[in-house]
Every structure is written in C-alpha cells, then in structure tokens.
Length: 302
Ligand code: SF4
Image (cartoon, rainbow, N blue to C red; front, side, top):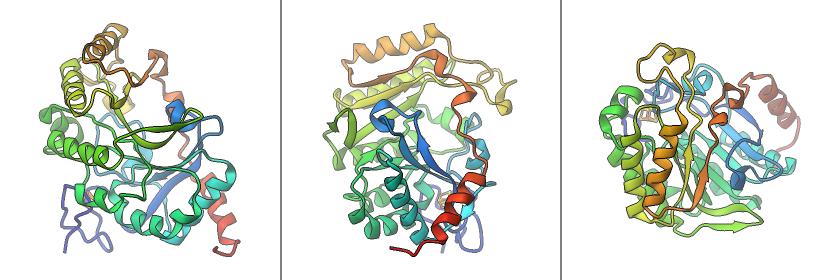
C-alpha cells in the first residue's frame, strides 16, 4: 500500500521507505517564536512555528533547503507534537504555525483531535498548496487559519521548477476547499483568528504566471486576502540559472501590484523589495530543538 498523503501517491509506505518528500514517521526541524510572518500572523509576540522536515515539492529555488530535502530533523511522536503546541502556547505564541505540514497531514489531524481542546490560540496551516482535498476535509474544524502558497498558474513552470504535475488544478482545488471551510476572515486586535490568507511569491521574469494566479483568486473572491511576496532571492543552487539567478526588480513587482488593484483586490499585504534577503531565513541548527525536546521529556505528559 502506497502513500496517499499528497497528490503524488508515491509507492513508498513511509514506515520503511521514504517517498518523494524524503521522510518517514513524523519529523520536525525547528520550533520557536517567529516574527517575520505577515503582521496578522506574527503579531507582537511571534508566531509559534513548528517546521516539519521534508517537502512534497522540490523547488529549485527553495529558501529552506536545509530542511525541505529531509536531511535535517528529529523524529517525534504525535504526543510530543501535541506537547510542543502547548509549550509554544505557554511561551506566549500568538498561534501555532505548522510550516510545511502537507506530508504529515494525518498525524497532525490525529494530534489536533487530542490537543485542540487545550489550545486557546489559533492553529495555522502553512502549506505549499500542493495537497489532497480529502486530507484537508479531515482538518475541518481543527485548523483555524489556512496560509497556503499559490505558486504557479503555469503547469510547465511547476514541472520544471518544483517537479510537480498538475500544480495549478491541484492548488486551485485545495484553495477552493480552504475557502469553503473558512470563507470569512476574523481578526482580533490585528491578528487573524480564523480565515484564509494566500501567499504568492512573484518570480523574476514570470509576471504572466503571477497575473494568472491573481485571476484565479479574484474570481474565487475579490475580497480574498493575498500576501504578494517580493522576497525572492537566488539561493546558491540557482545563482547561475538564466531565469532564477537574479532578484525581482521594483518595476516587475509594481506591474504585478497594478494588476492586482485592477482586479479590485485590496485585502492583504504587499512587501518591500528590501525583504528579499537571506537574513530572513531561520537558523535550522538542531541544538535549540534538542534543548526543547529534552525539556519536554523531563516533564510528565499532560
Ligand atoms: S506525502 Fe511524500 S511519500 Fe506521500 S505521496 Fe506525497 S511525496 Fe509521496
């Protein structure tokens, strides 16, 4: 029996054999407060991030490559995952932010079914948009805020840069499902408590791709919240690539912003081009994670 956690449907069983996402079991790489998400996610105290190891996309320009290729992390149980959520809540996190959760949707749903009653902060599902609608349905009522990427409207780009087939139709179906679950954004003191915020990273030289993404979102709802990101920077892996080897220009970003406004989409966030810096990539050293895990293991499970 293969894995059905995401649209790839790999033959791997994920117990003895890794699939495309590069992981078995339940594996995390970083836990901590994060201040560099959108203001309605980070708030004043920081978003309580749990970064999962591995990824079911293989973006050539990935900025979290250290962990997305599955080479760095610690195996944990669903109990420990639940305890980590409570630890972040005790630390004062504005929310629990599950980063790259798609390939662990099943153990996450299992954890949330047990631990959600003890959480009084929102659960944020921070994903890449390439997932299974069936799994999203199991998360209904467990996830408060969906924070998906919508990377490509152009399937050729998705295939070339992220090794993903049928990305557009897959992500469109997933975002439609997320919108069905949480059609109205609810904010309290500037923080998103329930709803959907879609992220799109504008890639240098590919403005048509961005405009087609905006077309889709505008027809879903012009009131939808979009975070239009300008933070692309070429990682060492693509530094010499003819397309991906340069940063976005202000003129390119402005053109996409103008297109967004022409569709009457006014909810969400724009970015300064100065945000396209390696400085915003978290440190994925495991020492801090090991300290937290050691602290939890010396506490009785509640
Ligand atoms: S979650 Fe991983 S193993 Fe499962 S289908 Fe997706 S890429 Fe393959």
